[in-house]
Length: 171
Image 1 (cartoon, rainbow, N blue to C red):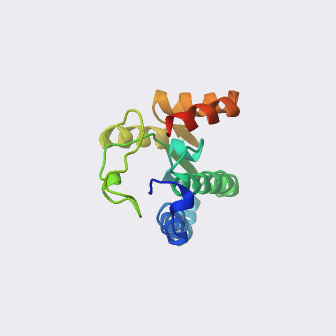
Image 2: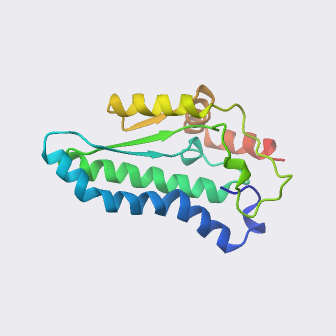
C-alpha cells in the first residue's frame, strides 16, 4: 500500500502497489486454474479466495494506488466468478477494513510520520475466521466490519455526500 497524495507520487508507486495487490493474485490464479478444474471435475468444489478491501468498494483520499489496486481486484473477481461458475469453481472476495498487521510497516514511498485515518481494525485471526466462514458458505463476496459496510452502503446512497465527508476527514 501507500499513503499520500497521488500528485506527489512517482509512477513507480502505482506500479508496485498494483503488482502486489492485483497482478500477483491474477498470476497465481492463472497458474492454479488447471489444477482447480481437475479438482472440480472430480466432484469437489474448489474456491479461489482473494482478500480485497473495503477501499475496493469506496475510494478515499490519499490512498489512490491502494484503492485502484483493490477496485481492480474486485472487478476481476466479479468477472472471474461469472466465468468459472460453469466449471464448478467458486470465487470469493473478502473485503476487510483495516486489519491489525505489519501492513503499515511496509508502505511504498510513504513518509514515516504519515498516518492512516482508518477507524477501527480487526485482529488477523478474526479476519481469517470470517474468510473461512465465507468460503464454507459459498459467499461470492463479503464485506467485513460494520464500519466497512456503513462506508460502502452510505456511498451507494449518496456519493456526493461521502465525497464531501471524506475530503474533510482527509485534511
